[in-house]
Image (cartoon, rainbow, N blue to C red; front, top):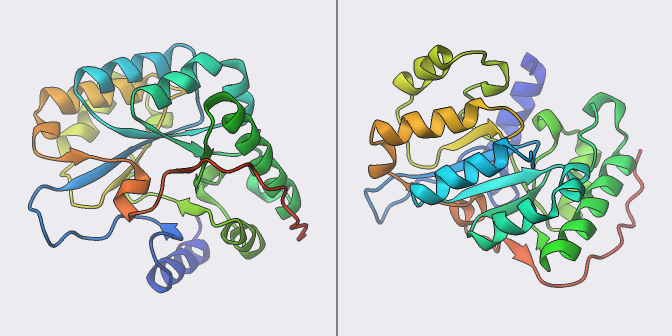
Length: 236
């Protein structure tokens, strides 16, 4: 992310409510237990997502999965398992196309198509969207807000998609100090997220925090049971 984009991101997130654009959750005032959101992008993956779900279940953790529509279409059982085990589904577009090469109209069409698939598979429409690479322009952002979507970014990025060894996972785990409202970015189309969760669990990290969905973190409904409305936005 370049310096200009970082500056715009800081300005936007300081000016709009977290229920519209989230980088980290609001600080709590009523409890001393930090709340963090574990999020996983780019799945579902037949091997890695299944393993992550096993680890989450074993440690009684809650997470949010930002699924890619075309991958969800190939793994409907995993999508249903995510919902059945109490996790949140988020929309990560249909194809995860390169943001600079995806027009606002195509981007919103992909959000719509993924919503329709997830509604058909699970009966609910995700209210939370994460754009590929976390990159948006104002037309895409405006289009999502017109659909009452929450845009969820992150403030903790282990860069697990670049990891190549357990040692790299251990190096990150040893430095992570949970803070209330953290939104952690992992990827469930790579093996390292499950390694990171296992190591965090072994260090007792999850004994000191509460893991919640992105929607819980910002206090919005995680999904809609209403039919998917056809988008009328065609900004370019």
